[in-house]
Length: 90
Image (cartoon, rainbow, N blue to C red; front, side, top):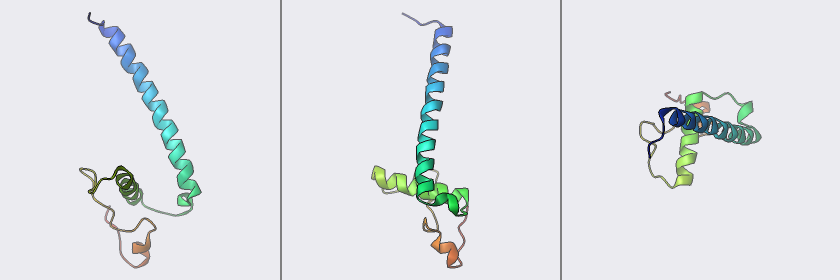
């Protein structure tokens, strides 16, 4: 039996709201962990931080290569490359 279009739209809206809530919970959790690790106290480009997070995610997933469309970080997560005079390309 077919669902009416209106019911499908309602279900999609409900699922989008649930997804938004789940993403907010995840963001808050990761944010708290990042702050505890001291990331809130250092200046780091968003692209460098994203790249470092992608490396961490792939390590825990067991991936051996970066996610498609993403380039690997060019500096260590602690920013040591910039301190040594190297600059990361965003």
